[in-house]
Structure formats: structure tokens, C-alpha cells
Image 1 (cartoon, rainbow, N blue to C red):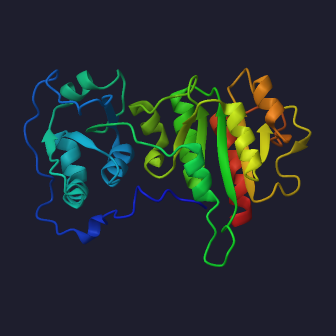
Image 2: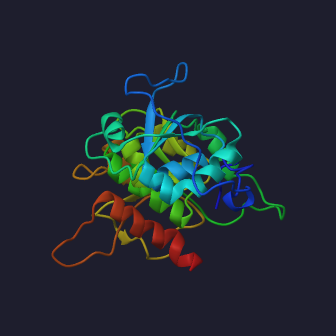
Image 3: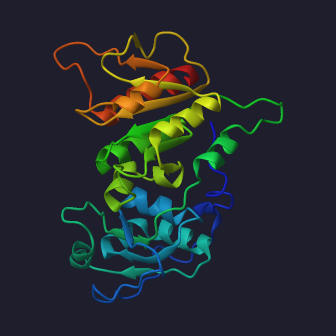
Length: 295
């Protein structure tokens, strides 16, 4: 499995930081509307335990503010204090009410008392990713299987976040999407990803069909997931370098994308419900490609 090189090179372990109290240091939050924004950056608020804690543990995250309710400070204070101390950038937790978070975040956001102002993460481009996944090991060979996911106009942030979570859990190397008609990094996507954004590259490419051709030239087998696939994804060995291409629900794979695939495969579903939604299908397919062979 290929891991990004830059995000966790000096990642602090919370247990290694001396704890001075059971709560994170807090200050009073100013009223909504006075938030500071990093120069030239799009404002992004992450929320929820996993998304916020993993982002704080990521040294590549540029943090603006961390807002914490009293209840969240009581539950997560020691962990927050350790993570903030490990960052060394001077960010402190600020006390906020649920009403303040409700005004800052989307309606209905399940924030669990935590909100983090940050910037979208910088991601490698496709040549950089290919260089990373093609780097030989000390023994002279590329270590282990390498699976990439390519999303063909999958735009729902909940689905994309769930796909990122499954991809990180099963050890995929990255998730690719076209620059347009893709879900951007948002709080909702990060919440659904449950921290996976901090561990797995989510690349935007200019032209998906052309990128698939580049991947093919780099030795990847391009496999499209489609209900009409000629074979089940678990039938036979697809090799160690696979790009799994998934289309949007309803439309499926677009024609140009489908034409770039070396093979179409299907999931071995049966019964009255013949298809899964795209995030569930991704989890099953990743288990077939990575989980089963590693288990």
C-alpha cells in the first residue's frame, strides 16, 4: 500500500505529550461574522470528532480556529490539548456554544461540539502520484498491490466521503475525480470520510479519460464497475496495479470513460435488490480487490 509521504512524517502521538490538565485551553469565541480567514484561502469548516481530531493530528493542515463546546471539552479535552501542543503553531481551543456552531455550520450538521476552521488540503498531481506508487522498495520491486479509485462524476459529498473512508480502510492508494463534476472538500464530505481525508490523497484531474490513459501507460489495469460487466469482480486475479472506475448512480460510467476501461466487472449481487449505491459498491469492490487477499 502506498501512503502519502508528507502528511504524517512528524505526526505527534497524543500519549507522548505531557498533559497539564484534563481540558484543552479555552478562550471566549468572538461573535459569528468576525472570523478570520487565511489570505487567499477558501474558508472551510470541518466538524465532528473524527474529522476534527484527525485534521488536528495532520501537520499539513493549516488551522485557523478551533471552536469547542463545554460538553466536548469535557469529553475530548485531554486529546485536544495533546494534539494542539504537538502542532506547535499556537492554535488554542476557543469555548463556543452550540448556538454559535449552529450559525457557522450547515443546517443539521452533526458537529459533536467541535468545529475547525481550516483550508482545503493541497494534493499531489497525477505525475507525482505515479512517481510515488512506482517507487521500488529496498528489494528492488514495488511493494504490494496498488489500487486506485476513479470516480466518474460522483458528486454527492456523503457518497464520496464514505468512499474515501472505505478506500483508506482497505488500503487503496488514492481516489481520483474529474476537476469538474466532482464533490469538493467540504465539512459534509470530511464528516462522512471520518478522518480519511487526512490519510488518503483525493486528486482532481483535468480530464478523467486522458488520466486513465496515463495510468494505463504506467502499467495499471483499468477496470470499470458496471452491472453489465462480463465477469464478477472476484473471478480471477486482476493483478497488482488496478484502477477501479465507478460511475455516478443512475448514469453509470460515461461513454468515453467506459471506452478507456480494459475490462468491465460486476458485483455478485442477487435477489430483488440487484444494485448497491455507489459508496456501498465501492466498499464491496475494495474488499474483493484488497481486503480478501490480505485477510
